[in-house]
Length: 137
Image (cartoon, rainbow, N blue to C red):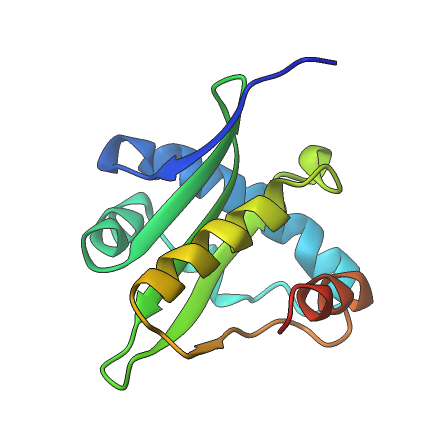
């Protein structure tokens, strides 16, 4: 199967696609993690995403020009970084989209001499914990 896969910095016109990716990804996340659906993400608006595009590094993964995943990272004042709003559409799980997004963020952080990176996830979502662990978190 041939397809085009790219990761690029997100731009303001991507905000709606990012919103849709995260909405679908987090529906799956709350089920798999067995957590309450009142995840803070549910209140995030497209305008909130546009604001983050101005203050954080936001990346998108696309397959054949279809937005499939997204991730945000912010470098803190103490030169650590925090990864947030990382999601891949469920139908694109386990084909490398998430891993590629993390690797792009990793390269970005190395180029900015960031030595520590933080993220939060539900410990009850074992597959995701293993995913992060296998990537060095």
